[in-house]
Length: 465
Picture 1: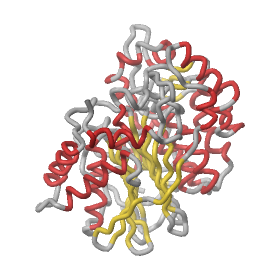
Picture 2: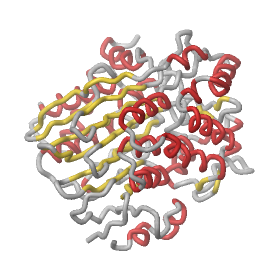
Picture 3: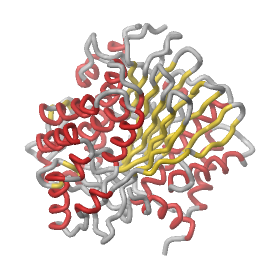
Picture 4: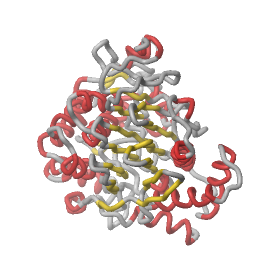
């Protein structure tokens, strides 16, 4: 039997209806793999700090997604446009932890300083089954409709092109593939894309493609969220689910919605920290972690580790799967808008099943073994005065949440977060990760998890010192 505290942590998500030589510094092989050229957005390494020039920034666990976000920002898009483009790109280039079948949570700060939580976690179907009703496409569509600046088609097209014409497997994806290869082998479409003739995971740099997913993304580009939830794509998801003993219906797909509400706030020193509300499991765990940290007599990583243990114990969580199939990403634009998002498939490659004819990896139902994944989705924003100081996102497990909380608390204590080494490694990357955009009054810098293989990218070429 689940404890009452653990049930509370799990239940909330279930109820949701819905210049310096930068390229040389990261290595020629890596630069070639992620497609960076002279005209491409430059990426910060762990030892570089931006000059006092504010540029749009994007950060992600997967480099191609970070580049897609920075490209959108360079094209006069805003932070919400950037995270939408990153989500769709991740659905192609990082399907171990992201996909059209996923769900998640975002925090958006508009240019006027108002912060809203967008909650679009995947939910269990009314009649049960192994697959979740996905919420992410609807969530990003709603968020972009309200806050975006670019045409919707511009945000989906890069992912569609990667799926249709091919993309190189990044080091980030390669590590996840190696760990989840037994899951990949059980699905014909995943195996065809990611395993070689001998049945082993394809190596870093190998170009792969997913034409069926490209066609689905084309429907989303042309028809918005309805192009996914209704019509032929939705019907194929329903048919596959029912044929495989699931229970995802077209009516449930069409009815999926996004919850919007104010983020929860807490004051730490001179800063206001915004986090997911207590109405979700993510908000409950993050609040517990903050509360336990506030009672620690010491500071630093030892205090964070102790607080994590206390929070897990209070919710009755004794063990968790190694990989919960989650990822986080964030963006900041030059007008002060920020967006941080964490999404999950509830396990590596979700259910491990691709809906026939769609290329869509279906998320596992949150009632399954990795159902607590959404409890550890942790988008955070810290604001000092009228300026965003830090936008952080933890994902993948309690260590991801802890690393994000640690980053905002260090910023609140006045510590400058200017390089990757300033972040607290989760100790469990790439499965638990933290990504941060850190700003002062003049400049921002994008910092990916120091233990993982992600990337931070700027929207314009910036000379570094």
